[in-house]
Image (cartoon, rainbow, N blue to C red; front, side):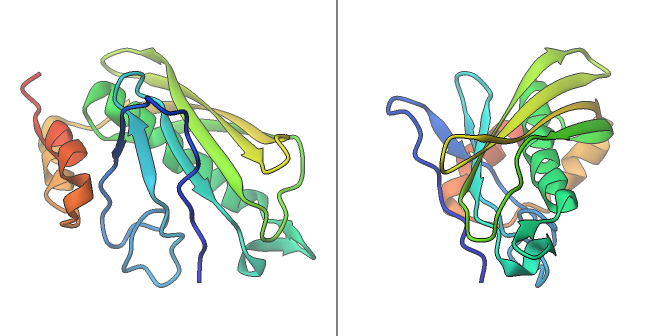
Length: 177
């Protein structure tokens, strides 16, 4: 079982829980191999927050978490930051991850992603992964490309019905603004 926990954020943040699709590798609940991540966006800043505690199933070698798993987690956080900023789902065009410390089994990680630049055809993002000791495990940057509105709307139709994600889902379904 994966032990994802909501990170403790600053009081006063206006956090919305982001929706998920059932089969998603990162956030889907029905994917038996998925990470089942819960992601939150600060409605005021657009910063995406999540936490993740990797288990022994996620190792690259004894006790050290596979770098590809860390890359998956940061991509998920950054794509949601880009999506929220442009109110349109995005695809990753390029991502760079710099690993600073090994992530360890059963070590809680906090992930925070934000948008650095938003244009109509490109959104650039950055992300940090921090362990329970406050050390930066990884830093990432990404370039995300918004998908066409019609495709975006088809994606929003696949959101799992969850009462605590309705506010964010409603924002993402409104393409008029």
